[in-house]
Figure (cartoon, helix red, strand yellow):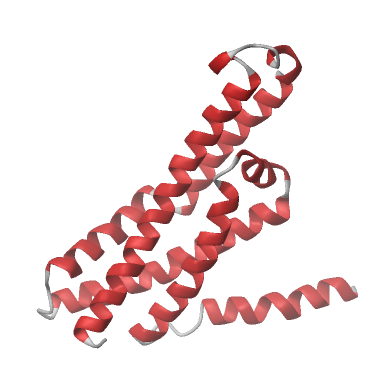
Length: 185
């Protein structure tokens, strides 16, 4: 085994085993992991929300893999939270905030799952690639038809999508902490 493959395995396996460990983790363990990953997602989203960050996602396989792994892990712990919250709801601990959190997790899991995220960003990468190919031809155009205008359009569309993903994650995190304090989970 080559040394760099061994080093990569030594670094990645503990992370994955921790992330995908015991399916019966306590709700506090799940909340802790979700927190850590959601804060990591916030950092990634900040980079993705600008044109250069989209470019990094499109071109740099290592960055793309990191983005997708973090989002995949957020979804993993989000599903664990969902299962535990649905169980609490079934046991009669239901309240408005619990139902809102369940609804937001369901929206996040169905509309912003990893395949949907990949599909959307692939589409934006295609737009970016086309724009960069046409850069010389449209560079001197004015307004929305020009290169700068088109960059702004791509950046705004990417920002809106990534920002909505981040906003859902942040809302879920906020609701979970409020439920945790209120119910002493």
